[in-house]
Structure formats: structure tokens, C-alpha cells
Image (cartoon, rainbow, N blue to C red; front, side, top):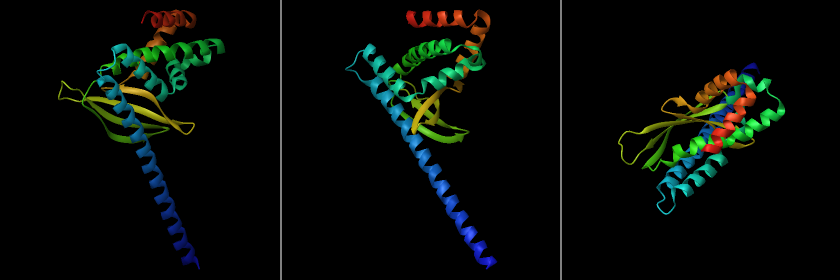
Length: 200
């Protein structure tokens, strides 16, 4: 009888491990398809000769806006200052940062009129997926390394960081914002951020 239960336990564990492995494989495939689709659309927009640069930029803005978690990113880049801001300041920053982020990223992707975009590797890091990809320019044989941090939010995959040639744009902005807030205070920082947005 004991042997029977041991065998039953082993079989149960094997089924559980197989189910978990299949679930991980399915998630990785979903993430790969999500990022591949994003990269393909960026290239398609950038390569579209029928549209003006302003139209391409707006299309890329719309694409980025649909595929990121702007509020999560805003909270991350605000860092430790998040705890010391009022609700009104948080709300103002979230609104401003979404515009700032899109204004920052859209021009970068607007020039990605390349040959192809390839997802090479996906790994799970805590609650995120790190997706390693490469963009192949038309006029350069050397690919550009462009990685993404992706998370699942409300049954939807969203991008929470872009990593260009090993440099995290979020980590960079978090460091820059931290220095600015320490130097000027949150109110002046918000005024300066609003000014940057309006001059772009």
C-alpha cells in the first residue's frame, strides 16, 4: 500500500511539473509574439513611404501608448520620492510623464526603418520577462541590441522598460529625476518637466 501511494505521488508530481513547464512555454510564446509584433509594427511604420514623418511619429506614439504601462513606469522613475509627494503631485506627474516618455521614445523608434526585428531570447526575472531582441538597420550590417522588460497586467502583456545597447531608459531617467528633485524640489521639477514637454 505504501509503495502504491509513493508511485501515485511520483506520477502526480510528474504531471504537475509537466503542466508547469507547459505553462512557462506558453507564456514565453505569448511574450515572444507580443514583442515580435511590436517590433514588426515599428519597422512597418518607419518604412512606410506614403506617410510623412509627422504621421509616422503619431502612429508610433499610438503604438507605444497601447503597449506600455505608463502609470507603473511613472511610479518607478519617481523612485523614493513617490512616498513624499501629495496625491495631486502624483497625479500631475503621471500625466506629465506619460507625455514626456512618449515624446522621448517616439523619435527614437521613428528612425527604425530597418530590414527586420528578431526576438532572440526570453527569460523570467521575478515578475518580469526580459526579452532580448535585435534590430537590423538597412544601411548597417551590425544589429542594434534592443531589449524589453515585459510584465503581465490585468491579463494583458505590457512593456515597462526599453533597454538600448545595455542601457535601461527607465534606470537612466530615474537617476536623472532623482538628482533634479533633490536639487530643485518636487514643485519646480514638475514645472521644469512641463516646460520640456511644451518645447518638444
